[in-house]
Image (cartoon, rainbow, N blue to C red; front, top):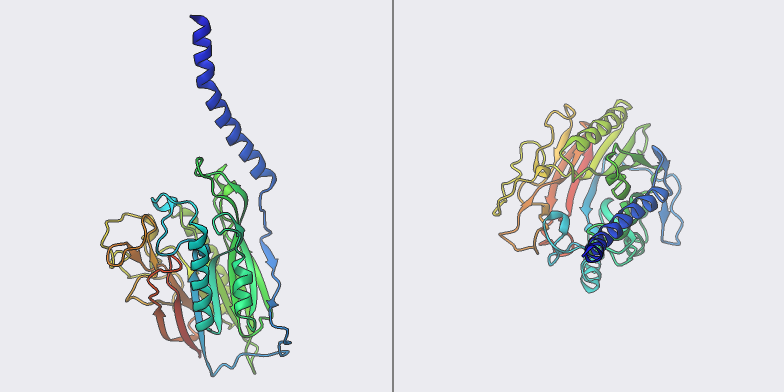
Length: 360
């Protein structure tokens, strides 16, 4: 009887011990391979075209400028997809879906060549994107654009969900421009510090670029961002306060400043549930501070959602959508128009947003 009990106990303990070994092994490996960027890192400015960029090209302060922001969802979150972090079941979309989504992303960008393009969730490798290098595909499709890339997600192996791990992830922010920036920089944001979660999570950042203005000592400062999503709001608050200081410093220099990207919160005064058919209580859909920086202007399209919930595949008129993708511009910039382009979330769980501005 004792022998049988020992065998039963062993049978029960082996899976527990194996799971514990799996967890400890992943923590040790993640610690050893942790992506630990510097607070400030200069980025390279690249261009695919063999034609030499004209030297010292500057922006004309009298011309209007076009901006485009888009979280491209690493080419894996098109209309048919759902995602386990949003309450769905999928971890990785099928390869043919991802290839189709990437074709849609590239085609849209080729046909909507804004002066400045700011993309979030652009992968260069990883299981979730089937190792498609979106940075290279997009840069090759826009050979006359200058581009810089700031890594914000570099984990060798994401072990969740345990039955179907996400695995390798390498992605970040991709900024492209027709005019060559004089300087591009990755600025580390405050991030999650809870152990061991932070070993497998993003190192969120800003991608800041500077562009000279003709006949002026001023610069146009363009900042690409993707603020915190999966927290109770505390990390996002720290990131917003950190970014605020940078914005105020740049405007104090008399520079023109544009901040754009995926904020993961609705603009001030916007009902985050105005398009809601499904019932949602998601903390992501709180509102940004209307007094974030007095005199600055949030620029967004209130007529349609820019992001959809990934609990299920997208169903028009049913799936929860809201506005979390938009711009913030300094008081010396006049916003002429803004439009969220309704792509039906075919290639990403976000719709692109276009803005036209004029420097004052």
